[in-house]
Length: 182
Image (cartoon, rainbow, N blue to C red; front, side, top):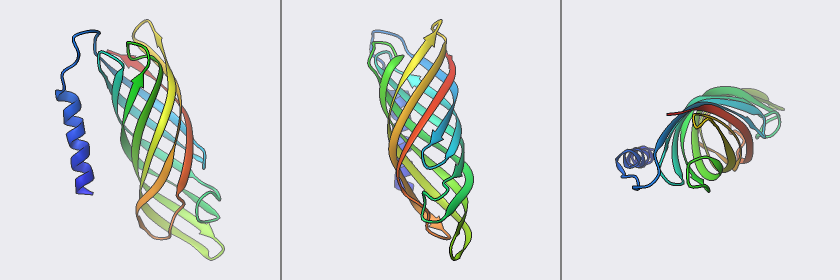
């Protein structure tokens, strides 16, 4: 776990210390996003994005995950919530960081889930990793305000679980974010 945190810290520092190209301009985005998850549940997050002068953007996120997996997991019902955060990279096809993009993101959640099944039920606490590929479109209003619908597909993996085993597998999300560029 320490190795993963160290790698993330190095990537974070590299994003701040790297030199931008001489063309274009850099921006910073601050916004909020909401996502719907295919197994059931929602996430709400705030994000900060550091956009390079040409094509690229790096994001950090923090938020809360409300899970209601019904029978998607290993039990009849898995329901709970927890905090989390993540990082991401977006490649914008136009010269400036807006319009159509493809990206990679990885979120980690500390979830507490109540589960029920034919043998009764229980409570599990888990560290859940959710790496995903995403695609979306950033609508830019007056070069300051953005609205961004996006979809992503990835894999939900439980890194460490205390209690009963929980569901893992392919996950699809759809969401929208809005905020301001400065």
